[in-house]
Image 1 (cartoon, one colour):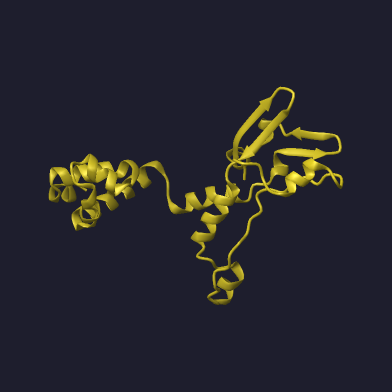
Image 2 (tube, helix red, strand yellow):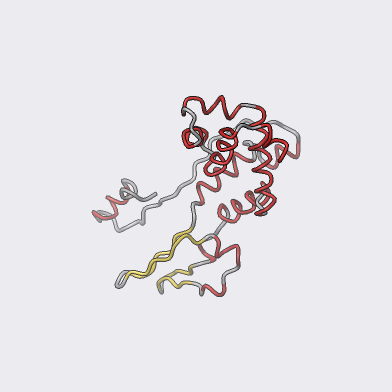
Length: 186
Protein backbone atom coordinates (compact mmCIF):
# COMPACT_ATOMS: atom_id res chain seq x y z
CA UNK A 1 0.00 0.00 0.00
CA UNK A 2 2.81 2.43 0.88
CA UNK A 3 4.49 1.89 -2.51
CA UNK A 4 1.19 2.60 -4.29
CA UNK A 5 0.57 5.69 -2.19
CA UNK A 6 3.98 7.10 -3.16
CA UNK A 7 3.08 6.75 -6.83
CA UNK A 8 -0.12 8.73 -6.32
CA UNK A 9 -0.30 12.50 -6.35
CA UNK A 10 -1.91 14.10 -3.30
CA UNK A 11 -5.09 14.69 -5.28
CA UNK A 12 -5.15 11.08 -6.54
CA UNK A 13 -4.70 9.84 -2.96
CA UNK A 14 -7.60 12.07 -1.91
CA UNK A 15 -9.67 10.60 -4.75
CA UNK A 16 -8.92 7.08 -3.48
CA UNK A 17 -9.92 8.04 0.07
CA UNK A 18 -13.11 9.71 -1.12
CA UNK A 19 -13.95 6.80 -3.43
CA UNK A 20 -13.80 4.42 -0.46
CA UNK A 21 -16.53 6.44 1.29
CA UNK A 22 -19.32 5.56 -1.14
CA UNK A 23 -17.73 3.90 -4.23
CA UNK A 24 -19.09 6.75 -6.34
CA UNK A 25 -16.36 7.90 -8.74
CA UNK A 26 -18.10 11.13 -9.80
CA UNK A 27 -18.72 12.22 -6.20
CA UNK A 28 -15.18 11.21 -5.18
CA UNK A 29 -13.73 13.20 -8.08
CA UNK A 30 -15.67 16.31 -7.08
CA UNK A 31 -14.69 15.98 -3.42
CA UNK A 32 -11.03 15.49 -4.40
CA UNK A 33 -10.99 18.61 -6.57
CA UNK A 34 -11.41 16.99 -9.99
CA UNK A 35 -14.14 17.68 -12.49
CA UNK A 36 -16.90 15.06 -12.09
CA UNK A 37 -16.48 14.45 -15.83
CA UNK A 38 -12.91 13.24 -15.23
CA UNK A 39 -13.98 10.58 -12.70
CA UNK A 40 -13.81 7.68 -15.15
CA UNK A 41 -10.33 8.72 -16.29
CA UNK A 42 -8.98 9.15 -12.74
CA UNK A 43 -10.59 5.88 -11.57
CA UNK A 44 -9.01 4.10 -14.54
CA UNK A 45 -5.42 5.20 -13.88
CA UNK A 46 -3.41 2.11 -12.95
CA UNK A 47 -1.97 3.46 -9.68
CA UNK A 48 -5.38 4.77 -8.59
CA UNK A 49 -7.13 1.53 -9.53
CA UNK A 50 -4.48 -0.51 -7.69
CA UNK A 51 -4.70 1.72 -4.60
CA UNK A 52 -8.50 1.35 -4.52
CA UNK A 53 -8.30 -2.43 -4.93
CA UNK A 54 -5.65 -2.72 -2.19
CA UNK A 55 -7.60 -0.49 0.20
CA UNK A 56 -10.85 -2.38 -0.40
CA UNK A 57 -9.11 -5.73 0.12
CA UNK A 58 -7.59 -4.46 3.37
CA UNK A 59 -10.97 -3.18 4.55
CA UNK A 60 -12.60 -6.52 3.71
CA UNK A 61 -9.91 -8.34 5.68
CA UNK A 62 -10.15 -5.92 8.61
CA UNK A 63 -13.92 -6.04 8.98
CA UNK A 64 -14.35 -9.66 7.93
CA UNK A 65 -16.60 -9.00 4.97
CA UNK A 66 -16.13 -11.21 1.95
CA UNK A 67 -18.23 -12.61 -0.86
CA UNK A 68 -19.09 -15.77 1.07
CA UNK A 69 -20.40 -13.75 4.00
CA UNK A 70 -22.49 -11.55 1.71
CA UNK A 71 -23.99 -14.59 -0.05
CA UNK A 72 -24.78 -16.23 3.32
CA UNK A 73 -26.53 -13.06 4.50
CA UNK A 74 -28.54 -12.86 1.28
CA UNK A 75 -29.49 -16.51 1.68
CA UNK A 76 -30.79 -15.91 5.23
CA UNK A 77 -33.03 -13.14 3.95
CA UNK A 78 -34.07 -14.91 0.76
CA UNK A 79 -35.15 -18.10 2.47
CA UNK A 80 -36.77 -16.63 5.56
CA UNK A 81 -40.15 -18.15 6.36
CA UNK A 82 -42.81 -16.00 8.03
CA UNK A 83 -44.01 -19.11 9.91
CA UNK A 84 -40.79 -18.88 11.94
CA UNK A 85 -42.03 -15.57 13.37
CA UNK A 86 -45.83 -15.74 13.49
CA UNK A 87 -48.37 -18.53 13.90
CA UNK A 88 -51.86 -17.84 12.62
CA UNK A 89 -55.15 -19.59 12.20
CA UNK A 90 -58.79 -19.36 13.17
CA UNK A 91 -57.81 -18.11 16.63
CA UNK A 92 -55.87 -15.17 15.21
CA UNK A 93 -52.13 -14.56 14.98
CA UNK A 94 -49.50 -15.14 17.66
CA UNK A 95 -45.95 -13.78 17.58
CA UNK A 96 -43.10 -16.06 18.48
CA UNK A 97 -41.12 -14.62 21.42
CA UNK A 98 -37.94 -12.87 20.28
CA UNK A 99 -35.77 -14.87 22.67
CA UNK A 100 -36.81 -18.02 20.81
CA UNK A 101 -35.53 -16.74 17.45
CA UNK A 102 -32.20 -17.98 16.14
CA UNK A 103 -29.57 -15.45 15.12
CA UNK A 104 -30.41 -16.12 11.45
CA UNK A 105 -34.12 -15.58 12.06
CA UNK A 106 -33.64 -12.39 14.08
CA UNK A 107 -31.45 -10.94 11.31
CA UNK A 108 -34.39 -11.21 8.90
CA UNK A 109 -36.68 -8.91 10.90
CA UNK A 110 -36.80 -5.41 9.46
CA UNK A 111 -39.35 -3.94 11.85
CA UNK A 112 -42.10 -4.75 14.30
CA UNK A 113 -44.81 -2.15 14.75
CA UNK A 114 -47.51 -2.41 17.36
CA UNK A 115 -50.53 -0.18 16.76
CA UNK A 116 -53.12 0.11 19.53
CA UNK A 117 -56.39 -1.38 18.38
CA UNK A 118 -54.89 -2.75 15.18
CA UNK A 119 -52.41 -5.31 16.45
CA UNK A 120 -48.83 -6.01 15.49
CA UNK A 121 -47.20 -5.88 12.06
CA UNK A 122 -44.02 -7.87 11.43
CA UNK A 123 -41.95 -6.90 8.41
CA UNK A 124 -39.03 -8.96 7.15
CA UNK A 125 -36.17 -7.57 5.08
CA UNK A 126 -36.63 -7.67 1.29
CA UNK A 127 -36.95 -11.30 0.32
CA UNK A 128 -37.53 -10.42 -3.33
CA UNK A 129 -34.39 -8.27 -3.50
CA UNK A 130 -32.31 -10.96 -1.76
CA UNK A 131 -33.57 -13.61 -4.19
CA UNK A 132 -32.78 -11.36 -7.15
CA UNK A 133 -29.26 -10.66 -5.84
CA UNK A 134 -28.64 -14.38 -5.29
CA UNK A 135 -29.95 -15.14 -8.77
CA UNK A 136 -27.52 -12.62 -10.27
CA UNK A 137 -24.71 -14.13 -8.21
CA UNK A 138 -25.55 -17.58 -9.56
CA UNK A 139 -25.51 -16.30 -13.12
CA UNK A 140 -28.97 -17.57 -14.00
CA UNK A 141 -28.03 -21.25 -13.72
CA UNK A 142 -29.91 -23.86 -11.76
CA UNK A 143 -28.32 -26.51 -9.60
CA UNK A 144 -29.25 -29.22 -12.13
CA UNK A 145 -27.69 -27.31 -15.03
CA UNK A 146 -24.47 -26.81 -13.12
CA UNK A 147 -24.29 -30.48 -12.14
CA UNK A 148 -24.76 -31.66 -15.73
CA UNK A 149 -22.52 -28.95 -17.15
CA UNK A 150 -25.32 -27.54 -19.30
CA UNK A 151 -25.37 -23.79 -19.84
CA UNK A 152 -28.99 -22.93 -19.19
CA UNK A 153 -30.52 -19.80 -20.57
CA UNK A 154 -31.58 -17.28 -17.97
CA UNK A 155 -35.29 -17.47 -17.37
CA UNK A 156 -37.34 -14.68 -15.87
CA UNK A 157 -38.55 -15.40 -12.36
CA UNK A 158 -41.74 -13.87 -11.04
CA UNK A 159 -42.00 -13.51 -7.29
CA UNK A 160 -45.45 -12.71 -5.95
CA UNK A 161 -45.13 -10.13 -3.19
CA UNK A 162 -48.81 -9.39 -2.57
CA UNK A 163 -51.85 -11.62 -2.60
CA UNK A 164 -55.32 -10.16 -1.97
CA UNK A 165 -57.40 -11.72 0.80
CA UNK A 166 -60.47 -13.37 -0.69
CA UNK A 167 -63.79 -12.10 0.54
CA UNK A 168 -67.38 -13.15 0.06
CA UNK A 169 -68.72 -12.76 -3.50
CA UNK A 170 -69.92 -9.22 -4.15
CA UNK A 171 -67.85 -7.76 -1.29
CA UNK A 172 -66.61 -4.32 -2.48
CA UNK A 173 -63.46 -4.59 -0.31
CA UNK A 174 -62.58 -7.95 -1.91
CA UNK A 175 -63.17 -6.53 -5.39
CA UNK A 176 -60.90 -3.54 -4.63
CA UNK A 177 -58.23 -5.87 -3.20
CA UNK A 178 -58.29 -8.01 -6.34
CA UNK A 179 -57.34 -4.97 -8.40
CA UNK A 180 -53.89 -4.73 -6.84
CA UNK A 181 -51.90 -3.67 -3.83
CA UNK A 182 -52.54 -0.34 -2.16
CA UNK A 183 -50.22 2.49 -3.21
CA UNK A 184 -46.87 2.37 -1.42
CA UNK A 185 -46.96 -1.36 -0.65
CA UNK A 186 -45.47 -4.25 -2.49
